[in-house]
Length: 187
Ligand code: FNR
Image 1 (tube, rainbow, N blue to C red):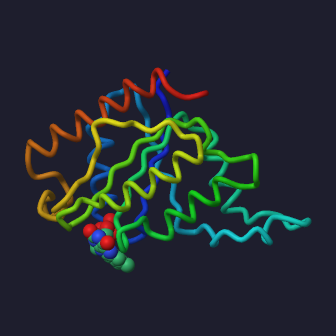
Image 2 (cartoon, rainbow, N blue to C red):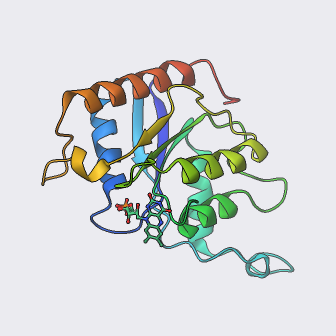
């Protein structure tokens, strides 16, 4: 059976170039993977008071946790905000990691694509995300790394990749992830 992959996009804006790349990579992926974009924009900022000492966790948290629990792997797309991940993405990571001992991330094979109009391809965000993944015990695809720099110039006005080199790279990336997911993870 195909592996179910959650796609988590660290940008909340409608015209996000990360979201455009997410759709393009999904289109390039082999049939051994199915994808589900899991939105993070409605998650309240993590606060233990909202679910401890008798409080019932916000429904958006519970639903998000369940959706991640149900998948075989996670593909992250992250913009870079001030050389790190956007707060919305960090918040989603934090929400999924709690309550203590019940993290939904543990053991899920993950890969990271950082996308930026800037020259450094979101390297800072990509690696800050990796730092959390290590603690959360998520196996991470090591190679190829995906730092998509100058990304605004790699898309047509309707959001498609406009050159073969980028397409070939992303195809190789998602094919490698697909093969690796088959042999990795606790599920
Ligand atoms: C940015 N941007 C940015 N870009 C970058 O390469 N390095 C950075 O450190 C930052 N810092 C940063 C901070 C904040 C608060 C914003 C809003 C933006 C620019 C960013 O890469 C650009 O807005 C992208 O288009 C964001 O990705 P999406 O939303 O298009 O997916």
